[in-house]
Amino acid sequence: MFNNFKVSIPVSTQADEWIAAEILRDEFTHIQSQLDSTAQLETEAEATVELSAPFPAHVATSIAKDPQSMHARTALLLNVLKHFTSAYLAAKDIHTLASGFDTETRKTVLSAYFRAVAALQPAPVPTQPASALPTAASSGKASIFALFGGQGTNEVYFDELQNLYIIYTPFVASSLQTVTEDILIPLAEEEDDSTFYTYGLDVVSWLSGTVPRPAVSYLASVPVSFPLIGLTQLVQYLIVYRVANLTPGELRSRIAGATGHSQGIVSAVAIAASATFEEFVDNSRKALKWLFYSGLRGQQAFPVTSVEPSIVQDTLEGGEGTPSPMLSITGLSLKELEPHIAKANKHLPSISQLFVSLNNGPKAFVVTGPSKSLFGLVTSLRKVKAPSGLDQSKVPFSLDFLSASPFFPLGFWSSVCRITANIWPGPRKPSSRRI
Image (cartoon, rainbow, N blue to C red):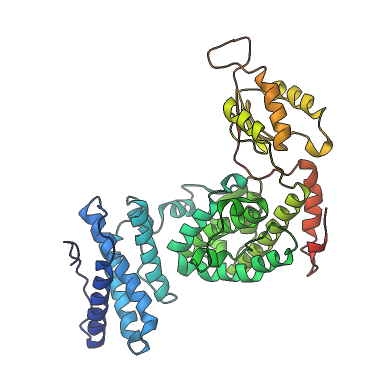
C-alpha cells in the first residue's frame, strides 16, 4: 500500500521466492516513499498502473545483486510480470495502455515494463497483444511506409534520442555503446585538427549522463547532427523490431516502402538492405560513416559565416525571422519566383548562388543559399509583396527564414559524394582529402 493505493500481486509460496518477494517489496516501498508524490494522477487506474509497473523493474534490477537468490528473484519476476500482463495487458499492448498518461508517467511505465521484459529474455515472457498496425499490415488490411526526415529536426533530435534511451535502455544501450566506440568517437578523433568536434561524439556518455550533454548549438551543427539524426532514426527502427519481437527482415516484409527527405534517404536505404540483425548492424555502421563524412565535407565546402546585426534586425522587423540558409516562400508560383532568383544571382558569385531546393506545392518553395544572398532576395521580393488587405495590385505571399544549419550549395554535392564514396572500398583515411 502506498499513498492510499494498494496493489496486491500473487506470488509463489515457495520459501525462497516468498522471502525474496517480502524483501523486495519492503525495498520498493521505501524507495517509493522517498520520491516526490505530489503529482496528481488523473484516475485511480492510472495511479495503480504507475505504482505496479516499476515493481517488476525493481525486481529485474535486483536479480544480479544477490547471486544466491538469483533463481528465486528470476522466478518472482516472471510471476510479477505474468500478473501485470493479465491485469493490464489482456486487451491492449503496453504502448496503448500508456498512451493516455502524461509524458512522465508514460515514460515511467514503458521504461519499467521493458526493463522487466529484457531481464527475462531470451527465455519466454508473458505476451501482450500484438500491435494493431503491424498485424493489419501482415494481413493486407493496411500499408506501412517508413519515412525518414532530414535536417529539419536538427535542434530537437537529441531530446528524442534521449527519450528512446531512457525508455528502451535494455534494447538500445549495447548497440549505442558499440557504434559510439567503434564508429563515432574514432571518426571525430581523426578530425582533431578541425573545430567541428570540440566535444567529440561520445553519444552514449551524453545519454547516460556520465558526460554533460553539449549545447544545442553544437548538436545542431551539420557535422554533428548529420550522423546523429541518422543514428536516432536507426535506433527507432531497432526499437520497433525488438519490441515487436521480429527480425529486421520480418519487419521489412511488413513495410510497403521506405523513403527519406534529404539525409533521411540514407536511413531508408539502410533498413531496406537489412534482412538480418547482422546486416542491420553492418548497414547502420556504413550509413553513419557516410553521414559523418557527408556532413563534414559539406561544412568544409560551405563554412559558417556570420550575418551583420543590422541584417538580423531588418528581417526580424520585416517578419521574415532570423536569417538562415533556407527561405520558405509561399504564395508565388515557380514562374513568378524564378525571375527574382535569376535577378539576384546576376550579382552573386558562383559560390553564393541561390537555388530552389524544395518544391512543396504549386505555390510553396524553399530557396537555399548563403544567408546574405537570401537577404538580397528578400529585399527584392518585399517590393512586390502585398501587405494583408492592402494594395491588391501587388501579390500576397509569405517569406519565412527556416531554422536550419548552413546549407550546402547544390554544386558541392557531387564533390561531396565523390569524396564520401572513397570510404567504402577499404580502410583508407579520407580525412586527408579536402575539397
